[in-house]
Length: 325
Image 1 (cartoon, rainbow, N blue to C red):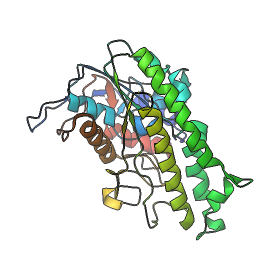
Image 2 (cartoon, rainbow, N blue to C red; image 1 turned 90 degrees about the vertical axis):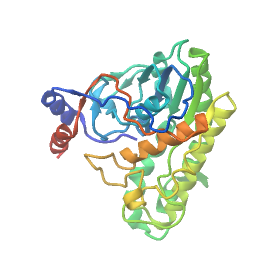
Image 3 (cartoon, rainbow, N blue to C red; image 1 turned 60 degrees about the vertical axis):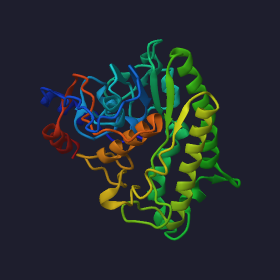
Image 4 (cartoon, one colour; image 1 turned 45 degrees about the vertical axis):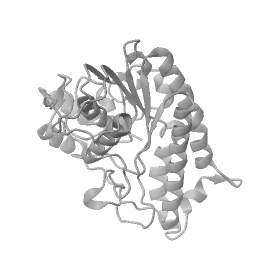
């Protein structure tokens, strides 16, 4: 899902940044008792890593564009874990659990390598890049809109011999998630595994300027995301993992949600989020809902977990934006 010419920009950013550290993790203000987890590992793609949500972590491969304010960093602080490791990376596919991922700047190691017998919580936010499901959908649906603005030209493009190839692929991802969960259990036998579903990108009804799809492709695109999340749920629950359903919590917070949107629309916001990716407020929503479903309690208000890593802050993010232009 991460599709932006970032290599030259990140080189300039790295040279410009001396580095700062992320904020110290705060304590919950409601006195609630937290679930007991000590060693938390986050696996995932760009919906987990949070590209362009400043500050950007400089201890990770820069091509992964990992935010210090993504939902794993918030969840780690909410759960008050002893150790926290985030190996998510923009553009990751399920196969990158087993094989390294090459990025424009740096190689992300096999994500499964972050797990150990001491790991007691794993979140997995992945699947949308498998078979190019989201990437081609996002780019092509905007490009073909003018062919039939009131119809479903994107759905038609991906229908071959009467077969909706995108819906077919969304169903096939179930097997990838099942295999991933089994591999996680093998590497971290004592861990609770939570597969985090994708937040709503499209509204259940209506259209908006932020998402320049043809009218009929809204319902179709939402159907595909629902099918993808169903694959995540079945792959999780039938292999001993918890599924974190983000659809109910994110209703009204889709890309058409204007000031309350958790997800960006089609235009890259260089200081806030990649196109069709979560904003910082979306990360807060995902972390809070994950905490609630894991513990049964309302998430405390916290600052992100302090990894001690150097980060590029807002001032440097502006330089980053200038470099991209």
